[in-house]
Length: 443
Image (tube, rainbow, N blue to C red; front, side, top):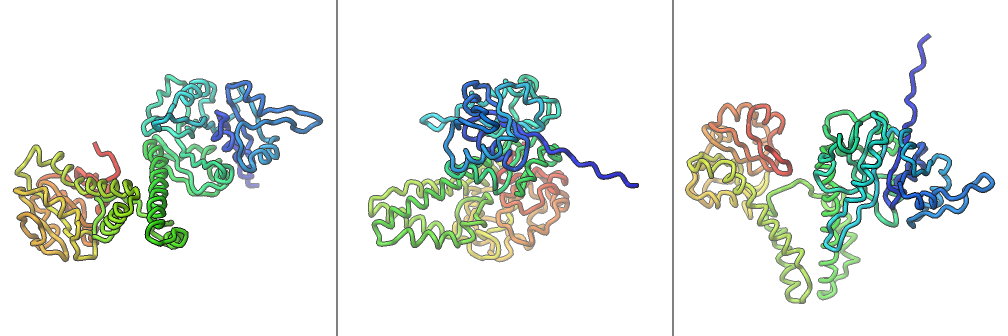
């Protein structure tokens, strides 16, 4: 007879820090059917949460936060919840979240002292195989910077992005859009109890390095800030030009680029002319009607700064040390599949390279479009031959077909600037290229 397959026991989940984040998240864990521990060293706070047991049912629970459906959900699932101020109770937990709220001062600076104090209390009490997860919002570098030996962290350590929104916090905790998980090694398999817990919520799990996860939270908020800024800026203009923002907003929500298909790939500033024109129009109208369009000016300034990335990087990595270097530039158009060079990042780069030995190629745009003297190549590999540095400035399909091994064998140098990730990054590194792209630190 074939033995029955073993079934992994349901993990015990602990949340430490019974402020808004920890309490809501812990209640959601219990509502999903997990044995949950809610820990806080504050004895008075725990007493309020524990309430009084009268005639077999809970009475007198006083939650420290007000959130729709939280009290009812907490009470309904109270039989799965251990409320405690005793660190010894944490030894039962397979996954332990550090989840105190992080306050900020008037300048927006975070006060991490509560996180650090709680970490020092919690870490030594955990089992060696327990997974510790930092859920509080912390700045990039915090999780990796934890001295595991000093604070007593012996098991796996992860960071998880919290997406708590006041007023709908429990709903978001019960039905998350995705889980963003920071890892020491993003390619390593998550600990079984941790993955089992996350998978119970039925949403995508996105492992990434600690710093990426920490910065993802900030990036999400940056996108939200931008959306709010657009709405505020344009709504104020509506008040002066006869438009109605309530009519415009639904049209934006139906635009895939603003909804689920937002532009999130890093780039080299705005190009092509249409976006720049619209920003200039908004600033002009704002000046005429005395409305604030400072955020738009900031976007314009940021775009100009981003356009200088390639030139700054090229000079720092190659030209400052070797002014005689040959530079190969693939792509002159502002984007693939067009002949337009309006505000092209490639031309912006070339304008900074007067007197440099440059050879260019573009499938459509002639070399005469370059703002400085360049040599023209009849093919991409002809341009690459003998170059000290390669800059892939337009993500044309033919360039995506180039083999990094062939590039490495043909170049004289090894530096490749590929802001749009045209080449396969792993293949480029394996070929020995000094591969530089946007959005990642490369030693």
